[in-house]
Length: 280
Image 1 (cartoon, one colour):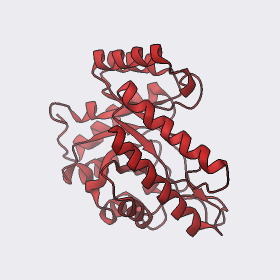
Image 2 (image 1 turned 180 degrees about the horizontal axis):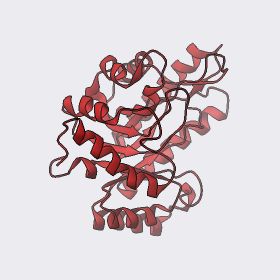
Image 3 (image 1 turned 180 degrees about the vertical axis):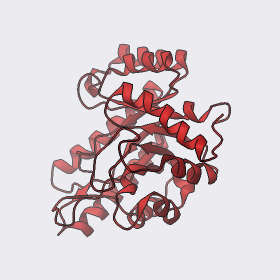
Image 4 (image 1 turned 30 degrees about the vertical axis):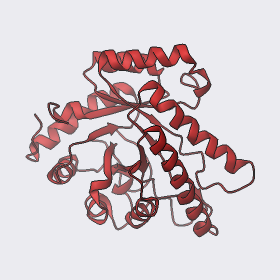
């Protein structure tokens, strides 16, 4: 990612806050080089991407030279195995993969689904098998999938996401074993994982898999996406650790409002500079 400053490498999760067209225009006006969007419901409902809209989005992306990602919804259970539902999940993921090259998306963030405690083993294998199929389909389409490490839930919670721990993350990545599937490291999820934290999480996973780092602050106790400085993450130490590994990829802010995420870049870069990280 030569030629880009650290600030320019920190993108914004537009999600469904605004249309992808407005997001691309906003990014160009604010020196934001990376955005991702969700195309589940309005204003970016997948069904709304007809030929005219696809052409318009691609033209905007290319005119402004913005790196665009798509972000599937973690509420869709990739570990689903029930009749009819399992076919719908396949169709959902394939629809995202089909859309990506049409609009010129550079990656798609995907998830491992969730289990209900008693069926963890079966659900995990179902998720891995499905992502293997989807990675194969993505290879055919020239699409890159990024598997996100998700948030830990309290010990007594019945429903739990996958993958959450470093071991689970590596298990998914090595079992799927496809060049079309890599890792989206969500630092704030690692931060409040009991007994782990950001630095230890990074040490326990082969960081060469990482193609995105997702950022928000966190209170260290439970799942909440806070503005940087409101929680307990040491962003200076985090950037020093990650940049020290030779990471050259992009970061994505994912919290509160678009304006908060834009302003948060300055806070993060300032903390990185204080930690001795090269920012220019």
